[in-house]
Image (cartoon, rainbow, N blue to C red; front, side, top):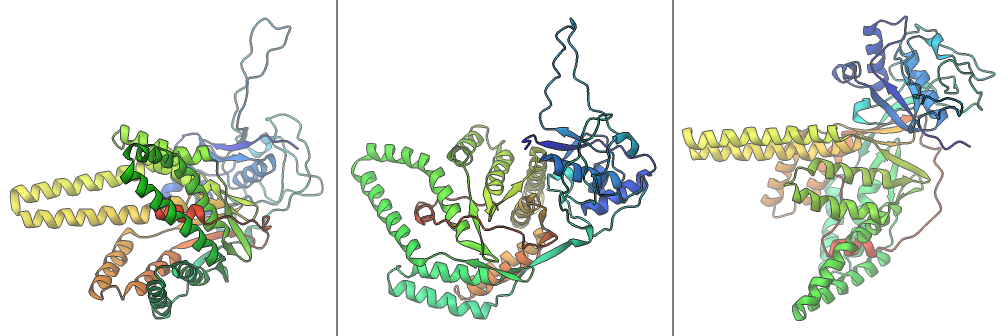
Length: 497
């Protein structure tokens, strides 16, 4: 079985028989993106619409896009130069890929027993056919199309492959997340957790953690099914006790032997990647959906780069690497999570992250200049108002935008996630929640948590290709809570947003 990987390339050219307006409309419907984002695909820039595909997958993506009128080609991820013949004295350059401009030029044949169902100028597929984010945003494209072909260079003889089942276009659907919890209902759990934790001098906190997570997981639904939190409180308690005594030991050594404390601190820095991986794996493997557990797998080297190396280099470059460092963190987490035996995939670009952070920086600069002008020319009080407004605007922009940026580039096999949190709405909920928590001396906290969870769920959806029942549960594994609790004890951890 071939291990070669392929990519789909597109430079804005269209198939003969289609008009530019028709193809743009088809691509917009196929990608489910705005007209502006779809138009960017036709600016003449050569893009990878999808990378790291098997040959079957590449054929399916290509066929669907060709039927929409987009002249795409399949290319190997690594195309080595062709070796020169032994008898030739002159070196030969490898043949450059060329883009087909008509369906007939592709020189492909249907798999035996199947028929091509689309004419060259067939109109766009049903708008509910697929949900793909724009290629320059790096999201996964669901493979569709009734016929599968073998990708070969133009003019070569195709090789037939076994038929692979694909999802019917009409089976693609958008399914929203829903949070059904109520503030009053959660208040009972919240207040009992606090009281029992105080009475037991913190021992009950492990059970409180499990009860809280079980409530929020159990009230979060996708496609009619709820999530599950399966951790054992005893396991969490053991991890917390070990972490607590480790912290006490570190504090004693730091006070009694300062030199040894420095060595321990350096050692702890290199232990952070291990702690982070253990923490993420514990939380993932104790989370489930439809009785299939999640998991997290990553190497120590990758975690070291994300938690230590990139942040250090970011400081050396005066924070110029912040977008790149955040992208690396998102990629580390997105590509590390599993659902059963299926791997999540995160695919984005440096340009997308630098554009996002650049916009936030421009917002901060604009409000800063406005504050300076107000302070020097009008009134210091007005300057304070402008600065505070700027802080809140930038805060809301990043709070909502980082979530959208991460989830919109995350896919699970043929299924893709989408988030459309509004910075204004996120800021309003956060600010009003904070004010009400202060005014009620903390008693509004359960309603605040439920309110935010409900909004986040309402703004998140998954484009489901077929159904969610085809995942195979991975081998049942258990992992210690020590990593998670060490992370809590020493205030280290990692989040995507």
